[in-house]
Length: 475
Ligand SMILES: NCC(=O)N[C@@H](Cc1c[nH]cn1)C(=O)O
Ligand SMILES: [Zn+2]
Ligand SMILES: [Zn+2]
View 1 (cartoon, helix red, strand yellow):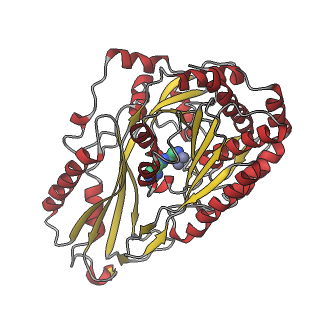
View 2: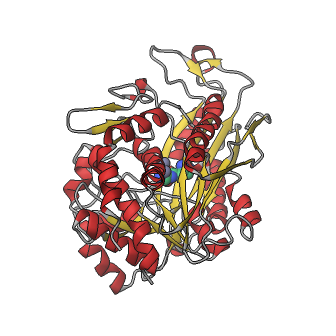
């Protein structure tokens, strides 16, 4: 059943108001990974509540406890926002998940505009941290409810919202809450929809039936009791940074191969039918080149590149905490450095079967250095890979909705990023989970100058609303 014309008209007529609302959300710097921004993350939960309650949504802010910091202190975790709208037993109940936290962003990282001020350009691109990941989609769901409630359009389904503020930092507290509430808040849910990933390019919508998992590590090397003068102590003591750089250089080759022995044996074998699926996806190497802004793709083979993102693991080096990085020429020997890297996990890898291989390998490599420094390796957070059955009414409804709004049949894709809660919803609640993206492949999520096109925001809002109408009638 297509969405009523009144709904579509309302979305078009309120474009400017919806952009202004996204601007309000972006202006709250809800960076979950930065303790100094924790009050902003919590403020964001209050902002969402203030939008949902006037629309008749019953909102609960669920406390999920405290987060332990590396120095032993504790920070309150932002609440998970539960929302309920409708309890008609004759309607399906859709669980809508989104996250209201964002990745860090500083102008000095290379932003052309203030990352926390939504800034449109003349092409209609809306720049701002969280515009596409994941405040645009979250606000879109609210816009959809508003359109129905204010226009007197009957919602075709009951809605449950589960909105978290720690997705970018390991979704701490959420799995336990879902387990606790599976026979409570979540009991009546029939399916899940998550709008938190991207098209493969700038032209073809997609539905996504898999995500990679992730294990995020820190390698801590410490030596002297304090930072040292390199003129006085260089070539005199074991330097933590030298050890760390050597260890980090042993993790992944420049062509992307993971150097940790045994990891490749954990990867599910590729079947012929799966291989064929990558050939049919609308995707070109130039799409990646445009998205990253350089001609640096690892392979010339389209299927290899797609498999590298969707069905094979990857290891990325992210940064070094404690290293000197400012301007000037400080001649310091840092006393303690922490190298950060993560591995994107695919079936049949799990944090449990990957961790021992990573840790043993790094200790073995460290032993070869014969350093007197101290090594510690920690898995900071982890989540498993997830795959759904796309032959389900949840997906069929989304295909119909996409065809109605975009006049195109969506590609079926797997996502290279990680949304740990997908697997929890599938396993703990036993529900089909659909990822229905709004943004384009060049949106720059997690990067500088993140954006969401006005076209995708507005048409994506129509898509998500139409999807609700389609699930009501699809079996
Ligand atoms: N849009 C989903 C997303 O960006 N997820 C993050 C999750 C994550 C885990 N640790 C840090 N962030 C991702 O990087 O895939
Ligand atoms: Zn996200
Ligand atoms: Zn993200």
